[in-house]
Length: 253
Image (cartoon, rainbow, N blue to C red; front, side, top):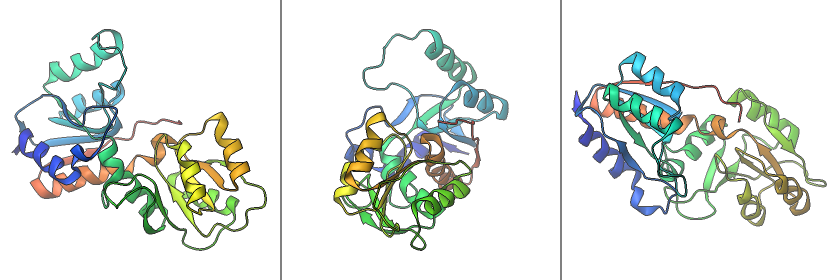
């Protein structure tokens, strides 16, 4: 076993959360046991994931979407009270990394999505790898928009919603940012991408795609962000010789 403080320090050194202006607290959100032998990972610290952690007797829960988001109510009532009660009653700590985990150059959500989709990474539009959130590169071969959508759906086991842009030919340059980054489509188009992939879609996204001449694929917030936290959990398990288990709580969004 190792200590929670050692795991936290290792994650902070790796992900460097102080680089990011985020909407939540990155790092330890709920204290648990001092000694950690089992780490469970998941995308979101929902009640279903907490219940899995209790059943597995996890010492620490590591997620991408934790608690204490900017502008949310600060009162500990209802759903929030039930979730925190579960963690505190069973002595399970909660560790969460949001934007730092999106951005990490090898273990992050964007990096692991690229590997999942066999994209050749060329860099980031908005900063250096490890800091930028909008990634760019090339698909394994030039593809039509529908062929790209089929490829993404097969690799993520979830059919994406495709908005085709009139007059755009084969996809040779692609940009992506996991999760709720649909408004980055403007930067992606200005950077010369033929297609942009993110997790969610808004009403305005369709018009932006069509009018800016860039295909858009909404591949699922959850589906695009399953891989970074798994990679981070695997890294911790290998580094500290502890047990790691990823639990995928089904989410169609």
